[in-house]
Amino acid sequence: MNALQYKISAATAATAYAVSGAAVLGHHIPDSHWGTRGAIVDAAGAVAFALTALALTGLAPTLAIGRLGTWATRVAQLGLAGMTIESVASLIHHGNTVGFLFFGGLLLTLAGLTALAIAGLRAGQLRWAAPLPALGLVVGIAGGDHGGFLATAAAWLALTVATDARRATAVAA
Image (cartoon, rainbow, N blue to C red; front, side, top):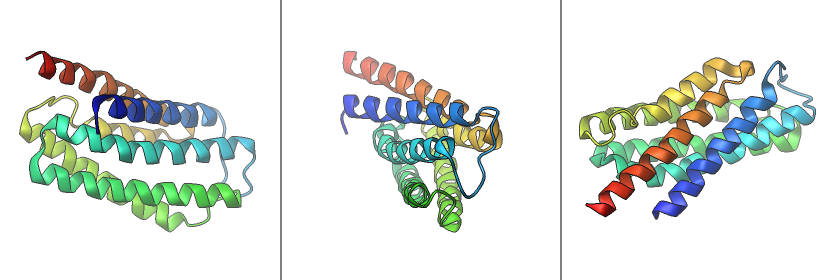
């Protein structure tokens, strides 16, 4: 993945997280019989999860993570794929359809992003940026109906800018 593809996927994922987070501010989205707001949240979530999986392909080499990080990235991508599939299925059926798939995907994603953070911290490249995907997701989940995914959006926006600056420095050197 080249720098432009990474930047586009990470920035678009950040935008989708922001849309999802903004759509729930002050509103509770039930597990079934969603209205327009629920559909927006789920559609934005599906886009965000898919593009996050894609963006991880570009982030991993920037963090110089080695085997552990590569493995962790694949685990997180598998989890994000499960969350994307569940979000699309729920969008089609106007409610939580296969929640176990989302929950399993969420666990895999958290495990993968946590291991990626550890690998990134150990590698020493952009140490402050390595834990951002995991922290952004945890804060996003904790924030829930209070716009939690706005924090995830901020994390991916920071990653877009930071890794772009890192790549520019590497090219200049």
